[in-house]
Image (cartoon, rainbow, N blue to C red):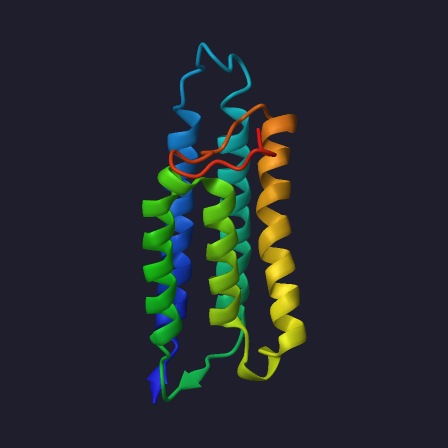
Amino acid sequence: MVKNWHSHLFNLIVLLVGIVLFFSARAIEIGRILGRGSELVPILMTSLWVALAVIIVISDLRKPEQFSTKIKMGPLLITLAILFGYVLLLRPIGFVLTSMVYCFIQIIVFAPEDKRTKKNYIIFGVVSVVSPIIINNIFAKLFSIFLPQGDIIRLPFLF
């Protein structure tokens, strides 16, 4: 049996990355284009990241040790591959379309076998299409931050 140490290690790494990103976000200089307040979103997001990571680390350490006989590397490797593809395609295709495809594949990767039905695929598709559009509009209208629109493919109804 293998002790569940990899979960503790991963959670600690996520916390440390969040702390580094938080201090990086605090070092953002106020830009000329967006002016004062442009540093707010990165500081807010990294603060939320660190707070959630602390909660996860504490709750993970408090639960009893679990033992596992098999570690599933497939979902991890697939996630890393689609994240790599997401980063590569973000600029040429844009945030909305790239996020739609990424979300749909990621949901399928983590969905249990018994939940992969025709009805649920439709739900997965709707969530994957609607979420990036809402996120894009929130950033554009509320924060005046325009996410990548795509150099090759541009959707006419987006900002």
